[in-house]
Amino acid sequence: MSIREPTPAAGSSVRLPVVDDAPRVGEEAFVVPEAPMARGGMAEVFEAQDRRLPRPVILKRPRHDDHLAAEDLRTFEDRLEAEALVLARLQHPAIVTLYEVGRDRRGRPFCVLQKVEGRSLRARLDELAEAEAADGAPRTRERLELLAGLVAIAEALAYAHERGIVHRDVTPNNVLLGDRGEMTLIDWGLAKDTQLATIEAGLARALDGALAEPGSDMTIGAGTPPYVCYEQTQGQPADPGYDVYSLGVTLYEVVAGRTPYRFEIPADAAGREQAIGSFLRWAERGPEPEPAAPRDAELSGIIARAMARSSEDRFTADELLRALRQYLTGELVFSHRYSLSGRLGRWVRRHRGVTISAMLAAVAVVAALLSWSALRTRDAERAREKARDEALVLAQRVEAAEAQTRAAEAEQR
Image 1 (cartoon, rainbow, N blue to C red):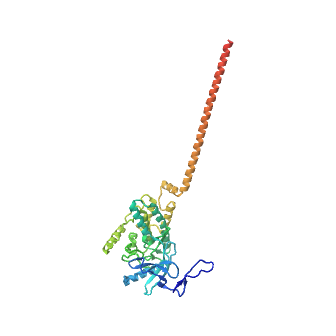
Image 2: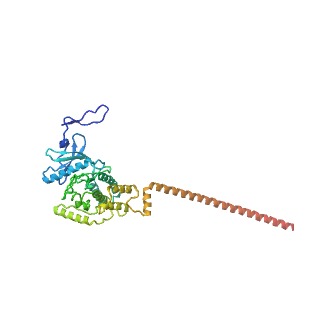
Image 3: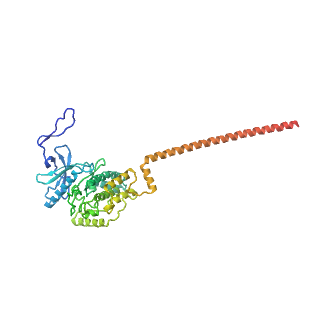
């Protein structure tokens, strides 16, 4: 099949590709480069080109280097099928779109996904951390911008949870950050459909994330430490609280510049096993982390509740979304207890424009009153001076009249 550029119809500027023969199907419908853009333990990911439409796409398939054992291939096929079934039910601006699924000539599965322009949230956080380490200046404004972007991820999770779907691997590696600050949640391969139960509960061993760079993430059970909650590591039934906890840890890292538990991924297998054991012991104890923002009780409280030890004590995704929106718009956060001064301060911050206008008006009124008072004071002083002058003149006249009277009386004698 070949594609040629047509001549636009009269009055039209639209140029659509013309397919000369029967349309290609399967992986043949896409131009796939030789080198993958990312490779994990089981999958490789390519930035491909759709032959039928002028658009870039992401094509994910099992590794073609005979790296996978038959059991691993079956596991990957299950995950890929599960991801396709999940994404087929989800249509949301902050969730990556599924275009196509199929099998190549060797019978191996592949899926084609929306190509989201941008980079991972992980890359942006690493960039901010490096800049802060270089000059010691906190990037507060930039971090707050990321916090605002994560509202879309909370909204996407609330949308998925309404449909019985739990992502189970919300991490900065699986959040893509666009050029305009928009965020998209990707890699739904570990997702669990709690309504249809089409996906097996988590893997029993650590696996590299399918869309991650080698060694950048490590999953345990179903999830990635340190973003995974303890009950998720124990293989308990999937719960929306998993995603709320993971997003809470992500929020913590965005605000504090680090995760509540410092988790390093050793290169050797023994070191990885030891690191996992250390993390599981930490997660089981459920220690209270330091506040994400020590000087901001509202924000720290939101993040702490999202990361609560028990799923029952956490926000729902809807509640977390509501709390974040209230915080960012200056409203009272429904989950926070305020003092009277705290309520007043929050009101002032939210109505900053009104407050400033009122203050300026008050200053103008006070200035006018002072000016009027000053004018009245000056007028009164002038009146007093005039009265004194007139009294002096009158006294002089009286004294002169008395003198004349005395003189006349003296002459009469």
